[in-house]
Amino acid sequence: MAKGNHVFNSFDKVIHGTYRAILELDGRERALDAVSGSGANVVEGEAALNARFRFSYGFFKQIRDHEKIARIHATQDDRPVIAGDDNSKDFGKASKEFAAAVMKWATHDAAEDPMNSWRQLVNAGSDIAAQEAYIKEGSSSPGTPKSEDLRRERCVDLSKFVKGELTKLVRNWLLAIRLDLQGGNKVSYDPHTPKAWKDLLDANVFPH
Image (cartoon, rainbow, N blue to C red; front, side, top):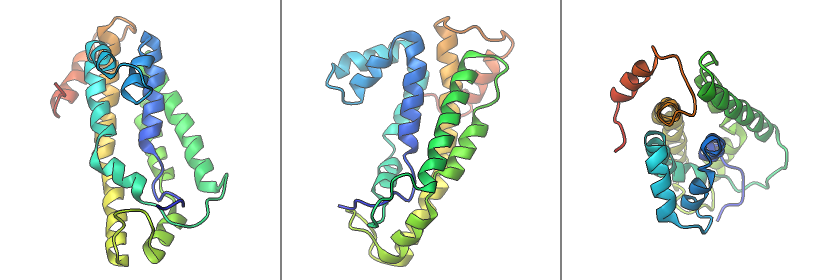
């Protein structure tokens, strides 16, 4: 098993931590802990989230359970990990800025669109040195392609996923967070805008 540097940082962990902070607004963070393996009752946790955060939790699950998220975690080199390297610092900074932007946007009408911060997170989320080592030297991580060409193809595919499908899912998840918070009367938004958010979500596939 590889114990090196991840080519792509853990976007899903950032999303999880950000979502947990949002759920704290409603006291449902322990329900997320339950479905994330804390040892609490998973069925009760699922029920609580589906009852109160049905739309955003549906998109959250799509992100969490996506096969390419698991592939991201398995794509790493075998070089020794250097604590506090520049890429980790950049990603950590971008992660905090994204989380703060989401919280502000979820609770205020006029806050800046957090997708701007998400794009910065995406830019910081690739470790170029780890990618070069992974492609050229391979990896002991299970499922690693045997040839340089196939390893390069995997990196390109995951990069396209992060910039494309994952970004779309994150956008829908953010819109759905507002829909859920508004529905529970936790946050009051401009009455003229909710339908516009729902129209954007309806243009894709609402989780049911």
